[in-house]
Amino acid sequence: MNTDPIEIPPNDEHNSQLVANVHPPDWVNPTPEGRYNLVVIGAGTAGLVTAAGAAGLGAKVALVERHLMGGDCLNVGCVPSKGIIAAAKAAHAAKNGGKEFGIHIDAVKVDFGAAMERMRKLRAGISKHDSVKRFADLGIDVFLGQASFVDSQTVAVGDQHLTFKNAVICSGARADAPPIPGLDQVDYLTNENLFNLTELPKRIGIIGAGPIGCEMAQAFARLGSEVLLVEATHGILPREDPDASKIVRESLAADGVQLLCCGKELKLAKTGSGKGARLTVESHGKSYDEQVDHLLVSVGRTPNIEGLELEKVGVEYEKWGVKVNDHLQTTNARIYAAGDICMQWKFTHAADFAARIVIQNTLFSIAGLGKKKLSSLTMPWCTYTEPEIAHVGLYEKEAQELSIETTTYTQSMDGVDRAILEGKTEGFVKIMVKKGSDQILGATIVAENAGDLISEITTAMNAKMGLGSLASVIHPYPTQAEAIRKVGDQYNKTRLTERVKKIFNWWLAKQR
Image 1 (cartoon, helix red, strand yellow):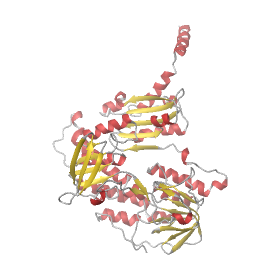
Image 2 (cartoon, helix red, strand yellow):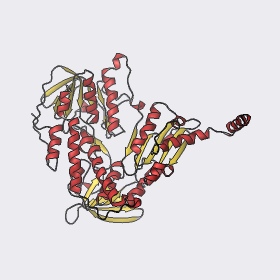
Image 3 (cartoon, helix red, strand yellow):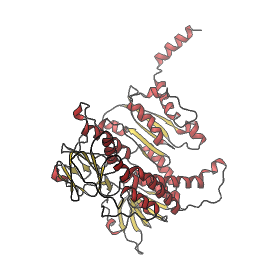
Image 4 (spheres, helix red, strand yellow):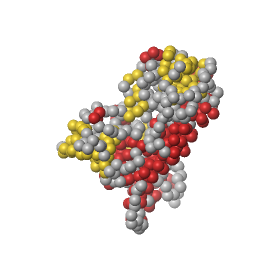
C-alpha cells in the first residue's frame, strides 16, 4: 500500500478527486513478474504516452511515479494555467470588450475564489485520463514510489525490483531557484504552488518575463492584481521575434502590468510585516523599492534526477538534464529518456512526440523499421497571452547564424477582414523562406488564435509544401487563417517578373 498520502491545498472535493485519480492513497503496488520490455520512470506526458503506446502494441510495461500521475502539465502547468487564463480573458472581455461594439456593462465583479474553484473542478475531471486506474486497466503495472537504478537491467521501487530490457527516464523537471540575493529569505511561489491560491493577491511580483511569467502577469492583472514583472534582459519573451514580443509587451502594458526590464541589482528581502516580499531593482537607470503580497519566480528549470542513482548505470547528465543522442538514447545503450528531463523543447506536445520516438527505437528498431530521430520533428509552440504568439521552425536570427540566406513575407492582421470585424488587428503572420525558393524555414504568428493558426504552416513544413502552394489553400470567409493565404499570394506575386509580364502581355495581345 502507498504509505505517503498526498494533499493538495485547498483540500476540497476537487483536489481530493484529483489525488484519488493520480495518486490514490490506498493503491497497492503490483508484484513484478518476469522481465519488462520497458520500465518507464515518471508519469508525466512523456512517460504516459510511452507506457500507453508500448502496452497498446503488446509490450510488457511498468510505469513508476513518485508523486502525481499526469506530471506538470495536468497538475501544475498547462491545464491549471489555461483554466486561469480563460477566466482572466472572460473578465477582460466583460470589463473592456463591449464598449467598441456599443455594449455597456455597468459593473464587473471578479470572484477569484470561484475562478480558481472552476479550474480545480475542470482539472479534477481531466485527471481521470491520467489516472492510475486507467493505466492499470491498459495492462500496465503501475508503481507509486521512488525509482532507483540498481544496475543496467534493474530498477528498485521500495523493496521491489523490476527487471527490464530497456528503461526510459521521463522524470521531468521543476522550477529552478535562481541565484537572486535574498530569495532564500522570503516565501515565494512557483508554478508548483501558484494554483493553490484561493485569494487574489492585491500586489504580485513576477520574476522572469518568459512564457509563464508573461501569461500569468496578464492573467493576474486582468483578474484585478497589481502586477510588477521583472526581467533581466530588454523587453519580454527574449527568445521570440522582436516584432512579436513588442506587440505582446504593449498588450501587457494596456492591461496594467508594470514591466521592469533590463533589471539590474535585483535583491529580495522580508517585509516589515513578514508577509510577502520586498523587491529592489534598477530598471533603465531608475531604482525601484517595492513590496508585494506574493512573489512568483518563473526563471529556469532544473531536472528531476534525485534518487535515480544514475551514476550506478553510467547515465551522464548535466545541470540542464540527462544527456541523450538524436535517438533519445542516454550514455547507457539500454536506457532512454524523453521530455523535460533531457530536451530543450519543454512542451507537452514535444514530450508526446518524443515518446513516440522512444517506442519505436526501444521496441522495433531491430525489426528493420529504423531508428527515429528527435531532429526530424517540426516543432511548433505557443505563448498563450492575448494576443498569442506561435512559432515553428527557425527564427531569422538563427538562419543568419547558420549563414542561410532568407526572404521574409509578412501579412498584418489589420489587412484581414475577420480580424478587423472582431477588433483584433494587432498582430501578423510572418513566414520566412529560403532565398530564391518557396521552402518554408520558419514562421511566427501573432493573433487571437495563433496557436491554432500555426498548425497549417507546421503541416505544410511536414509535407514539404512550399509557400506558393499555401496560396491555393481555400479558407472559409471570413477567417483569420486568410492571413496565411495572403502571405502565399505575396510570394507568388514575386514570381511575376518583368520577363514573365512581357510574355503574358504578348500572349494576351494575340488573343484580342
